[in-house]
Amino acid sequence: MIAAHADWSMVPGKRWIARAERRGDRWLAQVPRLVGDVTDLLPGLLAEGRPVALGLDLPLGVPRDWALGRAEPDFPAFLAGLVGDPGFFNVAATLDSVSPAQPFYPARGIKGMTRAAHAAALGLAGPAGLSRLCDRATALRPAGAPVFWTLGANQSGKAAIAAWRDWIAPALAADAPISLWPFAGPLHGLLAPGRAALAEVYPAEALRQLGLKLAGSKRMQAPRRVLAEALRAAMARLRVDPSPALADLIADGFGADATGEDRMDCVLGLLALIAVLDGAQPDHIPDDPWIRRWEGWVLGQTEMPRTGYAISG
Image (cartoon, rainbow, N blue to C red; front, side, top):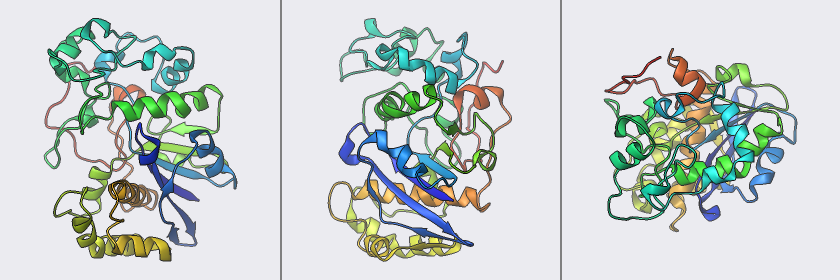
């Protein structure tokens, strides 16, 4: 089996992927590399005909309040249909341009740019309707940004646009051998020779799941270097052996350049993915039809948010 995790970005130079191969009851993890041409990503992972589990640091799903009334049966079907609707991915410059058919906003910081105004432009009852259940704050972590929001350091909308538009939607439309977790079912049931199972995995959530704590900003090399010993211990618990190059990179705090945080994130995501594959972390999917059909979930997350949904039908 092959496990991989890609730390995604709108910027190609910040798209890194870490890969590991199962060998007996252990894994051998390689040093992260740039993703490169996105059209080569899936063919490269599937070239050997083995089952592939691919974690992605980007949203796989849309909020239920926005999905109400959609004709498609679920998120994968909706995503496949976007191949014929390129305008969907245009980021609205003003609130007047926002609509259910063009939900991403804002293109830049302007007056009146609030999530409440964004929600109103989409016909939602309030800003909470912009968020999926898995985006909301839990007792253990703060809230993530809404899927369609595209401004600020905490946004994930631009990564969603880049991945959905450029390779995931085309792959689904072409009936490529891929499945999206949790929409197609539990992760282990999606693993088959020559097929890839894609799952949403967040490095910040992975850090918590692995029992690790970063003493400082992940953008700085020094805190990443301090984390090295605990990270190696987590790898040992999961029976993951780093290649010599990866061991050196971890000891060095993933490098001194600006992409060091991206390399660390894809390794954290890879370990969280392996934890679920090997049963160290549960493959938890809440028993909620909206999550299973439209919203999706974060792999390995077991905590429910502090606040739920008014709409549950």
